[in-house]
Image (cartoon, rainbow, N blue to C red; front, side, top):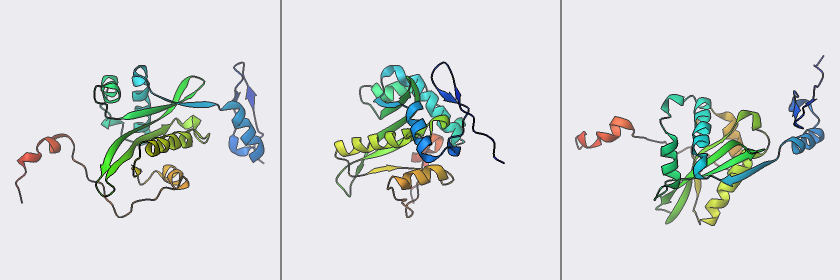
Length: 197
C-alpha cells in the first residue's frame, strides 16, 4: 500500500512535504504554477559571489570540486572587465538565485561567423523539473540568434544521463565523431619545450 500524500502549507504560503510525482498530471501542473514563479535576468557585478557559489554546486554534482580555483574577483573581471570574456544569466525564485547559464563566443571558419559556447548550465536540484533550466537554455539560444551566431555548442559528461536527455529534448544532436582535447596547467605552460616532430 502506498504512503498517503502529505501536503503542508506554511506561513510563507509555500507548499512543502509532498512528492510531485504522486500527483495527477493536471493537479501537479496546477500546483507547480502556484509555487514556482521565476525570473531570468542578466548578472550584475554584485552577483559574482553568488555565481561562484553556483559554480561550486555544479562542480560538486560533476565530481570536480577540486578543480575550481576561480574567485569572485576573477569572475567579476571575466564578466565585467574592460574586455569581458563571457556573459551570464541568473534564474531567481522569490529573489533567490537558483540557477545560471554562462556562455562565451567562439568562431567557426567553416561558417565564417561566430558561434556561442554554453560553458555551464545549472539549476539547484530542489528547483529542477520546473522549467527553469529550459528557460535558461532558451534564453541563451535567443542570444545566439540575436548575435547572428552560426551555431550553439556545449559539452556534457558522458555519464550525465539527465542532462543528455534534456539536451536531446531541446533538439540538440551529439557530435559523436568529435573528441575533445585539452592542455592545462604546466603542460600548457611548457608547450614550447616539446621537441618538434
